[in-house]
Image 1 (spheres, rainbow, N blue to C red):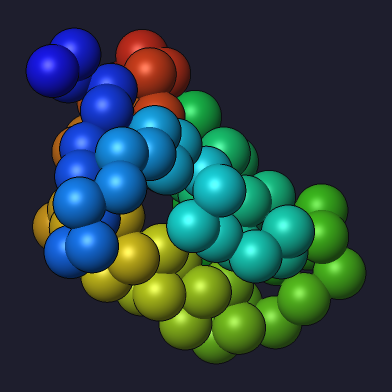
Image 2 (cartoon, rainbow, N blue to C red):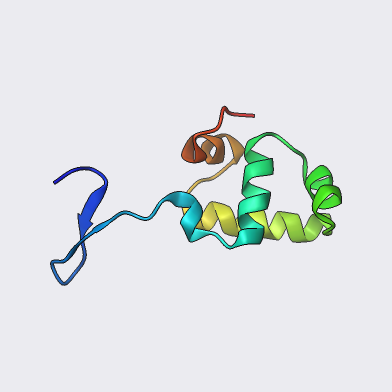
Length: 82
């Protein structure tokens, strides 16, 4: 079976979900900016959010994508590391 295919518990085959599809639209914005190396405060200012909100969203992104830091996030999203 190709690497981009998997079987679910019922034996049906489906395509693996792309990493960004697991995220909310707000989390996607934060993830992309963080993967590019932007600081919490910069992301917050650009998106009109508090730095704490950005930090919390980025933590959720890390959990959903199974990564521990921005470098791993950049790799997972296919971006050059910050």
